[in-house]
Amino acid sequence: MESRIIQLDLADWGQARSRPEWTAAVEDGKVLFFPRLAFEVLPAEQPLLREDMLAPKSRNVSLGADGVLKGAAGSADEQRQLAAMIGRFRRRARQLVDGLLPEYRGALRIAPTSFRPRQVETRAQSVRADDQRLHVDAFPSRPNYGERILRVFANVNPASVPRVWRVGDSFEAVARQFLPRAKPYRAWQAKVLNALHVTKSLRSEYDHLMLQLHDLMKFDEQYQKSGAQVRVPFPAGSVWVCYSDQATHAVMSGQHMMEQTLYLPPGREVNPQASPLAILTRLVGRPLAGVGAGVAR
Ligand code: SIN
Ligand code: FE
Image (cartoon, rainbow, N blue to C red; front, side, top):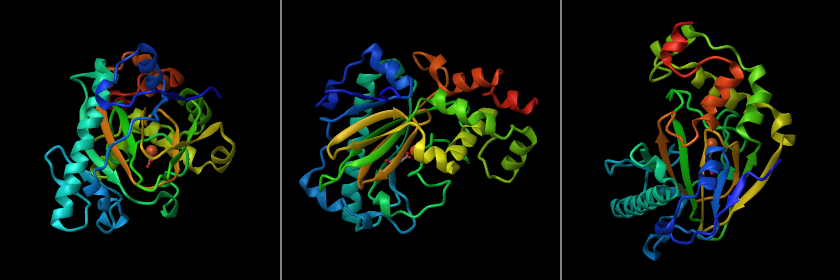
């Protein structure tokens, strides 16, 4: 397997520049890795890096665009500090993406920003929810019709513990392997799921296939064990960026990470032909995305 990690020597969030080959790499589902780019946690914020800053049952703490903090425990004062820290990361992540991928300016929709203080390796989860298994991101309840999931991650571990990922083969390779096993899309099922509010809108065939890939990958023990993959330790004080709907990934260990998701409308890539939507459309041999296209069948 060719390397799917591209290492970039950037040390300053504000100095990111774009290069056609980096854009092409991200749009090919590769991971841009910035070993020297650190998100700075201030000395006064260090005490916030602990697992019990999470409210019971929350997976992570998130800060919405409206400034509302969700999923946090701790005192009112700590929550204010935490909101400020997460807000600062949000601005950093935007700055980085604006510099790195200026072609997307004006098209990106920013999601809530998250702080993930849970230790990965002690988390017990169902197979489907287990991100220690290789997968591509797909949302069961929120159909996205091919909208892209661009993510900026920063390891902020205070004890120099790396966040260890596995990164698998290209989206096309994985899609070719698993698509033949995917259950066919049924428009009536999408309607039932929507009527039961399992989904927030009608699941398109694209969303169905992305979820099938996600599940088939996670449930395939042989693939998890011996599928093409590399182990990538992202050190504390580093940043990485990828399309998580395209880069096959798993998180094996680590604790304390910041994450920013940015959504790009389908077709707004520099090369839309490299997207999961375009790849699946080619492999299936007919249009997939539109709800209309799904419902007509
Ligand atoms: C994931 O998107 O699978 C989780 C990534 C992480 O927590 O490092
Ligand atoms: Fe994931």
